[in-house]
Image 1: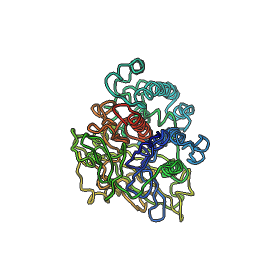
Image 2: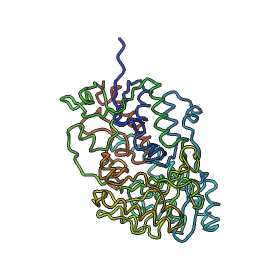
Image 3: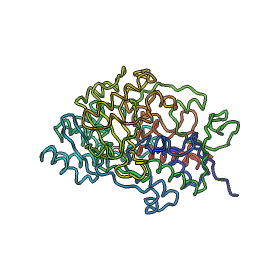
Image 4: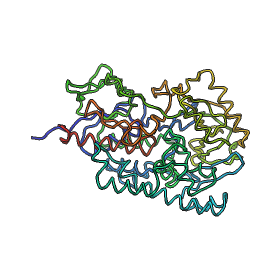
Length: 505
């Protein structure tokens, strides 16, 4: 007698939820994705503000092969996936501008990076970067499959032969020390070290306190290059969502889940959307941990420490204004301070940067048809800021003068005209908090020593074996590559459970 396909609810149509749904569909589950907003993508989105397009969430896309893999699970061939995503290499991946007037354009192709570095910092620095890039790739090879793209069930998993081999290689690579010290073994110039350590901010940890295992992030970023989809970052979510619906999955937009129902044994039995309850065999939730706890009616057992937040300024400049800048699609402008800056925004008593470093995003560099309209270019500026837990600032009062300070600072650093930007929207810690993000940060829980690897919030809910987590709050962590990985890991958990492992159906 044939049995029905298992029913799985996915809460959230961000990239983690869409990836989880794709892999679940590939394994034969009936999947319904519930999304509170009216479009897919979560924090990876492109929005129209006053008739102008902006990437208002994540803007840095690396390792797009993970997206292609999710589409492949739905039967979309790799060449067709490439066509739908319409990705182009961002070249240079970054333009790095320093307070002393030095500027480095980082090529998309890693093979070209040493020569670019040598032309600015000297031949010895170029040779050091060539060796560094090889070391970064070795760290990735030892770490990704064993420690990132893998579900762990207990201490036994950490002691098997595969894990021991990878751990031994990481020890040989000297990744247990600090990240800045590891990079300094290859490049002595502090300015150049920033190219390969600023990514620690994604993990919510200052570079000088981050472990060298996080060198995997600059390999994903600098070593493998940055990409951008035609039409903006929101295209990624739309492509995944369209492929899901083509495969027979349902996506219910404007449908927030208000409760997760459980039976007397703690197993999830359904999800409530308004007055309706949908019976399910399992749930994948992509909310922050505290949001999941609210739906189950529980109180989290431990307090989390969250990453710093950001102020993001979206504005318009007359087309041609940016032609005078030393800038690309992604421009990092560094102040003189570095260690002090991270101490200010990551400290337990955080404060605004006294000598800020900023990310300027100009998506129009490669896609003017989307990001230039009516004679104006869309430009965004991100200023890292402390989260609300460490600095509960009155953002309703200080946001406007702080924006003026940021654009004024950038104008004085060599971005003429930016202080005349017509600001159309500002996102800051309070607006992130109002959107339901803990501590007012879009970067989730920090990767501190007690919140990373096996110690990060597990992707199986402790009181419900068929409630599985995906997204930034759980393993492997924050950022577009990790959340896509988390979706696959969550789908694997549910598939194993529903096939009978751990007392499933």
